[in-house]
Image (tube, rainbow, N blue to C red; front, top):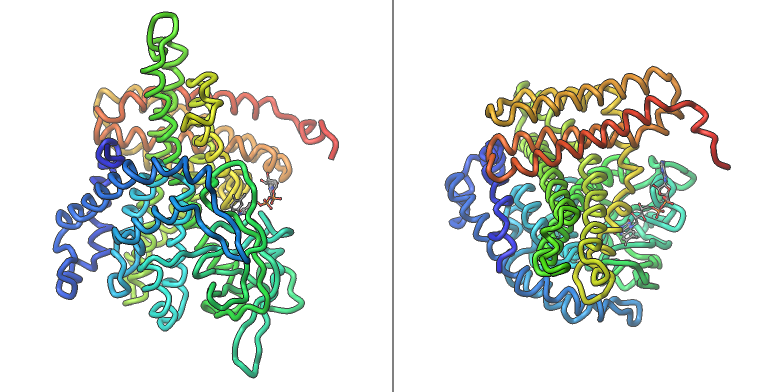
Length: 567
Ligand SMILES: Cc1cc2nc3c(=O)[nH]c(=O)nc-3n(C[C@H](O)[C@H](O)[C@H](O)COP(=O)(O)OP(=O)(O)OC[C@H]3O[C@@H](n4cnc5c(N)ncnc54)[C@H](O)[C@@H]3O)c2cc1C
């Protein structure tokens, strides 16, 4: 079995027309091949290289990572003398991925990375998350190196990035007991010792994934007396400084192989990244956008796993003399799971391409002045990336949860038993809509793009694409949904009340998200009708029902809704 080659949908995203441009920019017009003999000389060679890696990952995931997931669940990580000891199978997984050269995927070649574009990293992460989301976290945190690359000094890049490429692990230390969704309240203290010319950190972070990592990125309050985000800076802390320890590993519902730690900084020497005061405002915002895309990918990987498990079980389980997949009630569930999965994935790769293009221009701007046309284009990609990221993180994670619920249902009583993978998937899925910003916080981040009309414009742009005659009826139905969404936005805005807007924003968000996913799945179906058309038909019907429901709720809304419970 191979988790890449057995899923034809994944290869489709390598062929998107924008990929040619992304890869050309990533490879600086293929000039890197002069310096590195393994660098590709053209797009075809680059894709060949990506496919080789994806096939290798697909094989490792099927043969080792997925089979190891259950042992990791049972053994879990343990704590000894303030240090986290991974489960033996986690060590085996990490070792395998290190030896296969799968660390530093998106890092430049000069640091020992593979120099893959973001979208290829996402494809790999999609495959890994299907096998084991918990391991996906440990491996995926290599992504934090992007922050050092983007905002660290040349000297910091030279020192840290080769270590990440050779397999050292990272963590992102933001949350504290009193600072979760509201990171402006972070208190961990950073003090500068003038004599030594060095920063020190003191305080506690909680809920930190892989909290005993080799290299920590830590958000801390560097400006004494400040109370908001403008007093926070970002630091690098090394595990081997000896002054950062894990106090506790949380005992949690799912992703057991991914240690969630409470960590104590006891006068830990730290290095400032970039400028003081920009920690939250600039660097963590960029870091979290990357991480949110990562969780969206994890969600799609889990949604894929739930679909596969449900389908396989429904084919093999017999009741009333036939396989349960033959009962409409069951194949409705399984088909709905597939439709949601394909729609979420369409959105994932559209977001990722925009993030990729936006990042390519940022990189280019470091090397030379952009032309006015490039600057204009770069702004558009950045805005799309910013608008789509909270949509894909929020709705992708909600879809992972819906699919996990349905997967257990298809399994009946067996789904409630630990013997079946779906029981783990159900627990693993639950965190995706909480960490890296809850769905409610994604709505907060997204809503301005609804009220400004940006999602409406984006939908018009997506629907301007030509589609074959056979898909025209579905396109017409999506156009109707978009109209209904725009009317709902206008209706909420006409209330002229911020609290009512906040109250109804989740519904507007869902309406935007489902319309966007339908429009993107239409575009994917236009490119490959055989691969996507049946999911498209099903998803359009689901989206219509959801949008009609929310439209009815919004039209029945009165301000009394704000006070029918006790605050
Ligand atoms: C397993 C796990 C791993 C984690 N890994 C990391 C990590 O690696 N690094 C890290 O820094 N953190 C990590 N976290 C922390 C995680 O990001 C936070 O738990 C999350 O952001 C929510 O914060 P909170 O738990 O304090 O909840 P709260 O902020 O207290 O939220 C509680 C509820 O209130 C809602 N809410 C809060 N504010 C608003 C608002 N303005 N509008 C609407 N609703 C709101 C939330 O949506 C939620 O429903 C992890 C957490 C877990 C459980």
